[in-house]
Length: 398
Image (tube, rainbow, N blue to C red; front, side, top):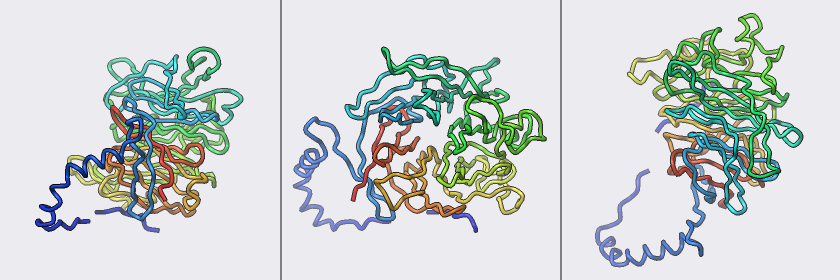
């Protein structure tokens, strides 16, 4: 199957006479709008977000954060939210309150670096392990992503991380502040998957002695599974699941056990990939985008030995966050993927059919979307990017 490509409305103007007649009512229309768009507490009312395929989502705000990056729901319905400068919050959706979690490690904040992803161990109810990714400062101003696990104590006093231990590091640490990636997911067999970006260094994505530009597969304690695909390429390569990646900011498994990731292209050419064990996805040797300088990169179809994406986007959508939907609120969307868009300020719905995928709908969010998660009762939850980024619950607007 050829990969899908997404490429580039107009509004008819009102007659001048009609505009002149209506202009006398503008102050009253403004007042009516204020009354309709506010509730009794002065908070913004729910608003409807329209998709370009006719779907409607009802968005409700649950507070603002300082550069929020990721979230994870606890079994009791509470929510963990990370902020890139280094804060972790426990959010109570019922009253919209949030508590600062103690014991968060120091992070190297700057550029694209800081506190990143947060996920729960599959047996969280028994062991209380949570996993965090973040940028860590090294020597000579070099940095790299790390993954740590800790026990979350909610019993006595403020929420606290205990027994924190680092279980994985990007190797080597390098200069610069971009392309850490460090998204996390547990697979159906209980293994931990980590996206490791190329750190804007390009060539390490094809290197066997650096773990940059790779998808990593580990046991929950950080040890290396004996059945990883690259057993004859050296000790570090034994941790690799796949290689040839750029900046992977979304990772999720479907109910068939298939791993899906997406990554930002260079100048356009973002990708949505079925991410298979032992495959090489070609970066930086091939891409559907070009370098920011305008210098061309060979297209995927020139090098069939590299795995091509199921979807690519020109122009860019700048994908971030990924969830595959299996809730009850939207029964027609079972098994479909949702991707946040930064540059595109959108939420994308992706139809998955076996090993094939295609964009099905795009919702104009009006803000950069950093993260997407499936929440209680089948609602979709998203985090807006940047200072003042809102936590939004998306429910059926039908």
